[in-house]
Image (tube, rainbow, N blue to C red; front, side, top):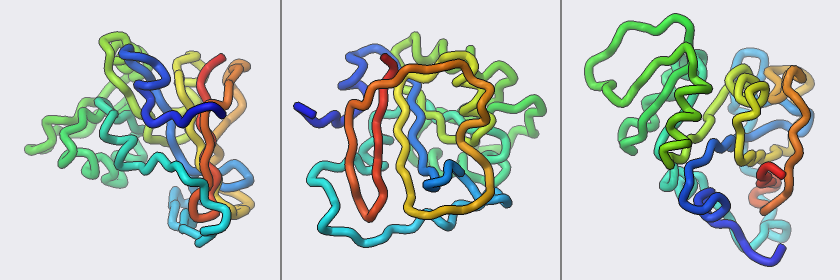
Length: 190
């Protein structure tokens, strides 16, 4: 690699992008059977850690829109983005009642087209999760950048990252790093 990619906007210029960044077990699961992710733990590995990193907070600085599925919303994960001033779009066929103080939230039955529109307006959209949401964007061929952190654990079962219904998508490795025994691979579309 001749250079380190520090932000998605560097990869895509000034235009918007739809990015996926998540952690996955070595056997391909993004959550356990109950939707939990407490298995994502640091494992000290200073001799393996690469010099450059892209900490999650630095990644979020460049994000305009956070997109999540209804399960993530029901678990309250949208609240993490309110203090950051991020617009949050929740994919759902049954929008819940509006809650005061959650003006940053939108609910969409047509999330792929809403997010594509935001991307086309120059916004960086972050697909937070879960697996069904990711699959819908893969089926629609609407992911520009894919970052996967591989956690050194075999879960044996759980919620898979890729369900297999998506079309073939050619990717190109543009960056990688190792931190706390997790390998982070950054791909963009070929």
